[in-house]
Image 1: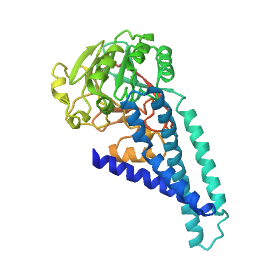
Image 2 (image 1 turned 45 degrees about the vertical axis):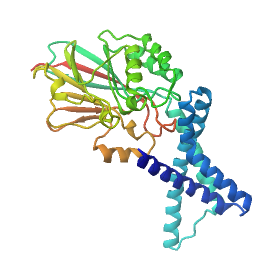
Image 3 (image 1 turned 30 degrees about the vertical axis):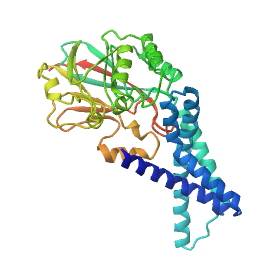
Image 4 (image 1 turned 90 degrees about the horizontal axis):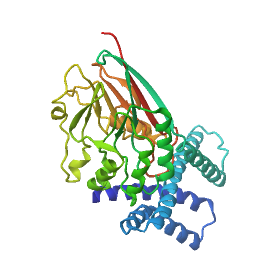
Amino acid sequence: MSIFLSLALLIYGSMHLYALSKMWMTFPHSYGLGLALILAGIVLTFSPLLVWFLERHSWHRATTATAWVSYSWMGYLFLFLCIGLLLDLGHALATLLNFNWPLSQAMSLRTVSLLALAMLGYGFVEARQIQVEEIHITTPKLATGHITIAQLSDLHLGIMMGEEFLDRVIAKLREIKPDIIVATGDIVDGQGDDLDALARHFQAYTPPLGAYAVTGNHEYYAGLENSLRFLRRAGFNVLRGESVKVGSIVLVGVDDPAAMSSRQQARLDTAKALDSATTNDFIVLLKHQPVVDSDTPFDLQLSGHTHGGQIFPFIYLTRLAYRAHTGLTELADGRRLYVSRGAGTWGPPIRLFAAPEVTLITIESRDK
């Protein structure tokens, strides 16, 4: 953990060094400016740790205010870095090809700053536009009719994702009226002190065939017992290495591997969970991370975790890490994987070209 924290602070500090050095090269040099930039870099680099400290001491209002400022700045800094490096590349190519670069240091700083601010504003708006993604699957394993499942993922309920956000999610559920609700992890965040109050919001819609959930990595960061208590009070049946027959399908749920590093008892054995299922059952596997096991029999795996990258161009990193695209993927052996972009945000409260989603899956019968 200490190695990860040190690496994260090193990277974040380097991002600040880049941005603040741009200001230093643009404005007239002075002792006061240098000192102000150094102090700003130190405070902003360590501000996420201040959020953690305030949260641990249950100072809710101070934590909320500090989190919004700190993580909004984090999003702005990332956008500033991406745009700045892109202009730096253009400047380098122009110099290499002996072209006249039209932007001075001051103009370049203003351009990058304003573009990053505009994209940050757009990201705030996009993060609040929850979309309903619909997929339809036909199968001979359903005797007749159809069944609908709403997938929720990566809400990250807590300090920043609170009642207003959750009410928008619940409004989507009431709009689409699914038979079943499934939650594929990271429903709670590593921060938050009033989850019981949030749990009551789920009572606004009760699905006819029940609600089911599995753990994600943030359920362990928030404390497993606290997270499980929240999920159960919200009306979810938590599947931890278990399966359950629901209507005409079988739901199977396994814990997230984060349980291993948090010294919690992990229930990852899908083979044991599938003991009661048969080859004639339509099996829906709930698994937080979009990692497909070649020896696990299922018809549809529902996952999340990647947020669709959340802020472009992170989507390319998540695809490289998990070798999975968001949306529906038809696997070579006939199985299907659906990876949700999730509905909430983690870190910066923005989304850029990765709109939040609630997924409606319709499974229909098909003649054999």
